[in-house]
Image (cartoon, rainbow, N blue to C red; front, side, top):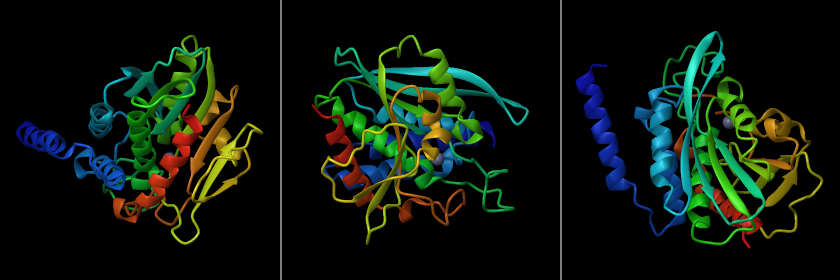
Length: 282
Ligand SMILES: [Zn+2]
């Protein structure tokens, strides 16, 4: 793409956010807005290290309201013989507590396809609406709620990158921020939470902890799976503390070009938001 065309795309994109990026009165509209923005054609499927990933990070950064300390974390990893330079956005809400809860969701996806795609032969944008714009939308809304409401302890929000290539972002974070996180007490991970069944609403979670979450009020069934998923997703690098990873389950559009915003259950996302915020509210 020529520099001129690139500048035009970029200008339209930023203008679009400025125009469209205000939060609405309707929480369902906010979730939809985040997912649409993260799946936009300009982001080109958010492959790790790509311009699309940077634009996705920028979107999250701009949507996070004031009241937290935001930081960007640059790092580098080697995957499939390529060196990838990536950056993760983080936001810390300081409650002056001795303990910190980490809330994470991976923001990267498959870009235009590649080995992990299940749409063979398609060199097209893989939008990743459920995987994992849904989780990032939750990260934005939870952050913006807790900058204005009290929580049980400090909260650290992280949009992981390098996930699809091998969980490199969460690994980097666990290794290099250990000092800062010496009081890390709990990890929540949101990965593919946008496809809650409308007839039989259900949320699955996998955890390395025996403490169950059944007592909190909710409008859906909450089902605990084996701890396996917790051991292979971004929670993998934090298993020395209790970790919970949430999903509404896999589906036929997983890793395909058809993982689109219109197939997500936005009411279901909002119901989960009410549940998660109750878990963390003081
Ligand atoms: Zn995912």
